[in-house]
Length: 95
Image 1 (cartoon, helix red, strand yellow):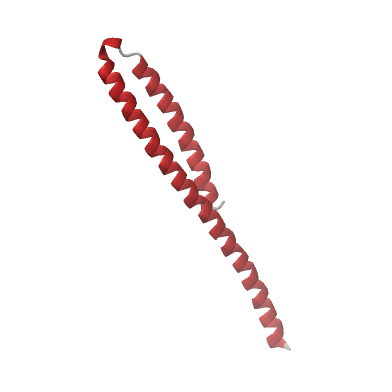
Image 2 (cartoon, rainbow, N blue to C red):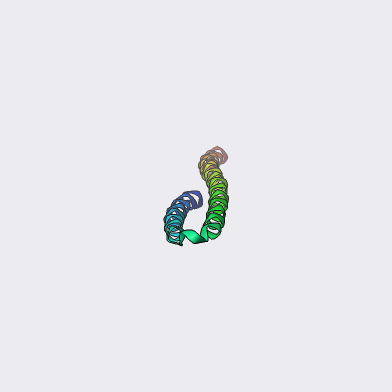
């Protein structure tokens, strides 16, 4: 399996795990007593920042993996062309 394809699958798994953990943590924050409103507010701000950073990282990683897939496809096509040219060269040299 190609590295780019494996990377996309890995990224999908990480996004799923992040989303689950984010929801679990948000629910846990919701259980803090209302008299600790400053802590709740600060924690939710940090969650928002964390989520934003993860989303940006995920997007950039996805672009890298997609470019890797395109490059791997290009290499595969060049290898096929090279094999054809080598066979043509052998045929030409024999004649």
